[in-house]
Image (cartoon, rainbow, N blue to C red):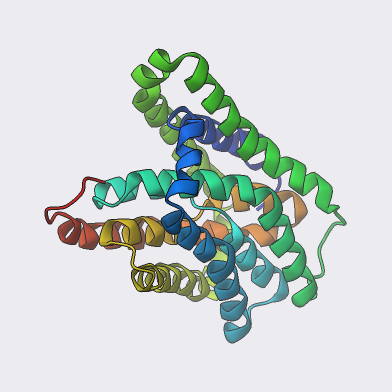
Length: 289
């Protein structure tokens, strides 16, 4: 996947737009509630920050992926939850508030987590990268396309609350449409590369997707979260921010982006199937999500 205008400019810009619209739905009070009711967020973050990356390492080792594809899989596993997870959690009648909070917190944590696991994976798999790169620009890029737009969205919500509430859903739909279009374009521009590597990484990305959702759901239940909270956590693990992984990977080495691109081709199918299953279970009388 070459560093084209789509992946170097349009994709980060679309991702920033999505993060800004996420910020429109958040206030400082949402983060304060984490201290009062931290268990759901703590379990979700533990899954995202520990279980998912370790699963990616293990699957890459088990299937003997080539070094660059293995590093790309770990980069994907270390990426935060995506806003599509919030949407699917809503459809599944899960705890949308918990999902949005985990997405926001994990997006901020990505500033440290993504570069850390990327560096560990490069060392572990002894990846021979096509170009030399420094970690500081990676940290800066993650900050610029996740934390900054999220903070801008929250600032707009704080200063122009009425406008934000009136336009939040419309802004989300527009940003989501732009985002999906750019992701599809990013994959389509290098369809041959994705196709040539599909068979090699399809099993790995499918295993990461399904195992992460399954394990995180049962870990959540073992931690005594209810079904709606467990649904939110599982979908956060099933719908990673693959666009962030592609945006980071492509400038370093095109092959690093292949696992995220392949993952994007089916994560909505598996995530949607899980959401449909849980929608029926979560429809039982109880506290609204």
